[in-house]
Length: 354
Image (cartoon, rainbow, N blue to C red):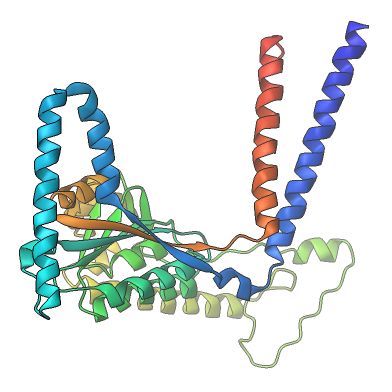
């Protein structure tokens, strides 16, 4: 009887797990079939990073510092803030500009996590559009960038979005904590200043294209494949047709042309680079990238932000897509799936079966 009970319990868990997987797959398919217009629906969220780190600091001080001293310090700080705000308000009523000391410089932080299609460029566009009208003299923008690269045209557009910041005359800093390679570095090089963690990966100024060819497999199985084109080089290499040396030569020629454009773009943004040396497709870790001139300073984004918190107002700006019911359902199913896996793993481990 115990065996039947255990088997029934296992079967119920397995059925639940399969059902969760099916729900998740169905939800992902529904999300993928959304109309493109829906993807642009969303809103801007702004988070005060000074406030965030102030709360963290206060939580630590509450434990390690004297309560009376803390009370006096916080009272004095609030009094000073009120005094500055009062002065600024009076100046504003008179139609005068507030004294420089009552308005801190501002740094706006944007996060870009790239995939092959640089999908985050859509968010980047909205975030930059929201920030630029708010910029005052002395403000700057920090972009936390992480990307191994991807499609040329997609990352070209993402780089152009960053160029809008430069065109507006706003100082742009790009921070690379993990990787900014290929298209990622195409974006990074637009910045006035690039900072990178010591082991961040940068470079890969090169172009790659690869595709399988199934022509011999089709021939072996007596399957014909026909590709009809108008224009000598409409299709140079194909997956199913017979590729020719002439087609390969043209394809390589196009790659070289794209590489030349890439090198030219990087050189125009970082003219001090020895482009012939760094545009070989190689990558460098942060320390070596600094020596080659690919970055300007070794520092993490967190360290850089903390240097600004004392004297600047720092805001994290994000464009958040509106989630439809399929996405919400998919996220819920994904959470249930993870919990199901964890529960089965814990049961199996408890019985020594894992």
